[in-house]
Amino acid sequence: MLSPFLIILVVLALFSLEIKNLLSSVIVFGAFSLVLSLILYYLHAPDVAITEAAIGAGFATVIFIIAIKKKGALIMLTYPRSRFFYYDKNGKPAGLDYDILYLFARQLDIELEVRLVENWQDLIPQLVSGKGDVIGAGMTRLEERMKKIDFSDGYFPTKIVLVTNTRDTEINSINDIKGKKVFSVPETSYFFTLKSINGIEIDTSFLDPNKLLEAVSRGNAQIAAVDLNEALFGQVLYRNIKIIEQITDIQEYGFGVAKDRTELLTQLNAFLKEIKNDGTYKKLYKKYIH
Image (cartoon, rainbow, N blue to C red; front, side, top):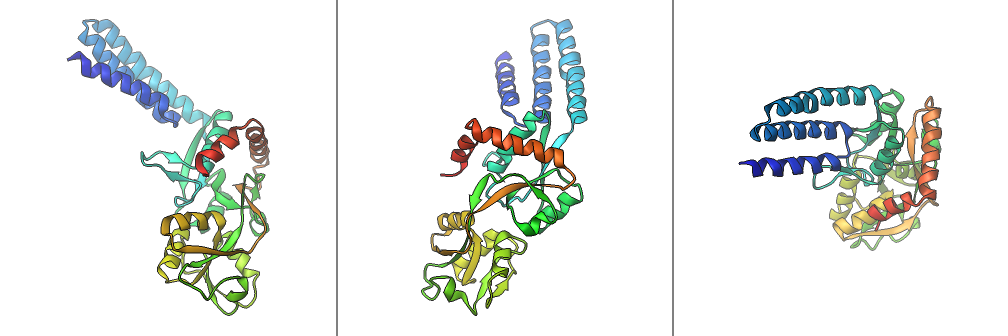
């Protein structure tokens, strides 16, 4: 009879240590105290069991939750289909952007709260309106965007490339796209790049880079402009996508911060410099970029 409770106790203890979210960890630890009180009662120590239930599972848990809520959180606005934020097979948040901002929030001694924004185009408006503290979604530092928000120092290099289907022999370089329809996603770095190219028609009917690459794979879109990282992922996922040519120099991803949050931006830049110098960034890079 006692063995199952002891196993549950160990599982709860390990789970509480593994959970990244502090609030969830406290709640699990409260459950640990409750199970422990049941074990103590079973061992004929009702007075100790009552104390454990009242203090451990009750009073202490409430105090911890109040303390966490009072400290606040760093709210990360992100795009759920970004290569730099996603939920892993266990349903836990992951990705280079998430891990960096999680460590940053921990340094600030606050929680990291993830707020998903369904449409890429809504990320900057929601940041400006105060619905989040920082954008972490593999967003390129661009002059057009810097008119609305500030960006942290760059933390990841990228380029814009043209892609097509491997069966397409008509398009082999940027010179071959004149007079053609080139597909892109509105308000992305690749959309802004295409706007600077004369003699092409830009089609923004796709709102999701994943759907755009799928369309190229199926032959429903002849030419598309995407980030190099998106293109490389597309080649793994669809196999019949080929990169034609890069159409920009190296650009960099940065974390978006509202223009009135200068102190937060200063702290974030100092943190990025710190993790690059101490090797933490290199470890995170290797974790996600193979």
